[in-house]
Image: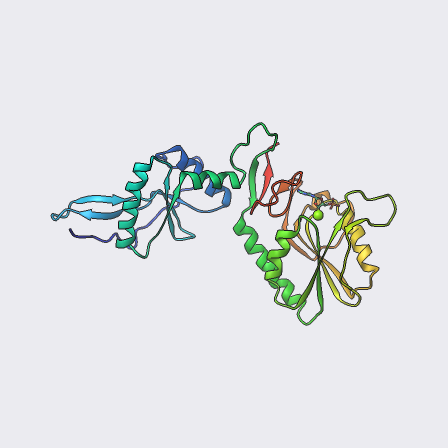
Length: 300
Ligand code: IMP
Ligand code: MG
């Protein structure tokens, strides 16, 4: 049996999901393409076949055509939402594939994993439980990671040689803070505060968790998930100023500028947002959806 390697420079066309979407062999493939689209992950449907076995006379006996190729990850995906007997058959093909093409990455995704993936990302319609489903992904995990890294780099540059205290406003900021911090290379102290949702009419702020670090004479960077009307932040900044820091600046992941009521100066913004309610990456709707790794709108 002779093995003929596939052409190395096989030119591949990017076929986006949408009107020009290819004919999928199985509905789950169309659904998977939609999932990738949500993420902003580029994909190609069955762009390449890998010869596995040839007859002695050169006739091709068996080939493997993975369902998807993700050019940004240089990875092929094979969906197996099929019967167990077919899974065994596919596993055998995959073993051959790995032997013959050790440099090609192919991942097998089975039905159970796949459904779990859909559920985890809120893309599966929920029951009548009244929890709305995720509608549109505005910023993918990758978009966020890239932007947060940029912000971290900028902050590191701006605060080099200064005494920095990051003050996070709970609870929406948890994911953003954790990721942002990792990209700040200057030494820093970390603190959090949490505002009571029931703020009185008095100028006094009410905390469910107050500041613990002494911020006198140091550079404070307030880290927020989203600045909406800016009312909370405005009062918070006044409160921090009274504690005698050298400076107070604001870094927010999302800025809903159009909804601003109280003017607050923002030094670092992840993404500007229109008047839309979003969840994920720490942000909640009735305490749900904080664990989504991306930022999305909800249906209705
Ligand atoms: P504001 O700027 O005083 O109006 O308050 C902003 C706060 O409202 C944020 O810190 C969030 O906790 C919450 N918030 C505003 N917009 C959203 C959203 O789109 N999703 C989730 N929470 C939001
Ligand atoms: Mg908040």
